[in-house]
Amino acid sequence: MEAYEKSLTAQPSVNKKFVQYKSIVFGKSYLIAYVEDEWIKQMGSTLDAFAAQRWKFMTIAFPPLVFVPYSWMNLNSEKHISIIEHEIVHLNQFLIRKIPSFADNTIEVLKKEFLHTMRSEYEAYFIQLANYPLLYPEEKGFSLEEWCILRAYTQYLDRMLFWGALSRIPTENIISLLEWLKAELPKKFDYLGFEKTAGKKYSNQLADMVLTGISHIFKDYPQTPSAIGF
Ligand SMILES: [Zn+2]
Image (cartoon, rainbow, N blue to C red; front, side, top):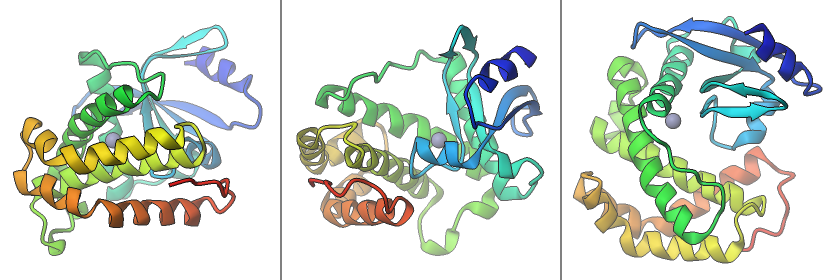
């Protein structure tokens, strides 16, 4: 663990601390890195914390790891714990499944990533909220299944829009992807075994959801390049 800390120290301005965290849901210990809040924010507009597969920094190969904002170090609220437990579901997914590489942003890769995100996020939200029901907003009228589908789907959509805004995904690929989602959501949700009505509903609401996603990006990242071309 010390070697990991030393190697991350080579990255200037990133405050970090590694801890062994005992998962309440899984009863096992996992490695967590507390890093600067700003650093986490740069990784994606929708993330409070995130899990990373095996990765390399300088000469050291890291095991799958959960990154958590430094400011959470002494926070033990149900919300914070449940988010860490959600990320630990992803660590387990990394350990037991082969996660495909999404290294490039071709339209075919973005479509595959859609299926992968829907499966892995649905599972993570379901385990999180089944164990921490306080965070499941029952009053909104969604069943737990519907809510987990919505969270997984908006997470994917927001990430794609965020990457599009940063030009990590070319605008024409974002447009093709949105057209594909509009046409295919009902079929793909059916294929994933999700509530059939949800696919149709989100296909119809795609334009509104895209506008909401873009407004979140501008709110969280006012410095985002103005050349959002979609
Ligand atoms: Zn997740």
